[in-house]
Length: 63
Image (spheres, rainbow, N blue to C red):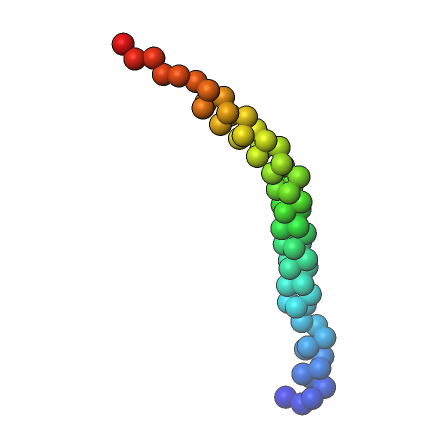
């Protein structure tokens, strides 16, 4: 195989481009997940604190 055939085959190979697309798509999904977790975490922490306070104030009746 000569050098020109290797160069032509390299130019036709698109596996690297597909890999880059998947990496960018995966990074976008991970970034979106982190953004959602960041925005929701404050509300869930507040809700957990309210539930904890309510449960702490309750008494258990025994017969």
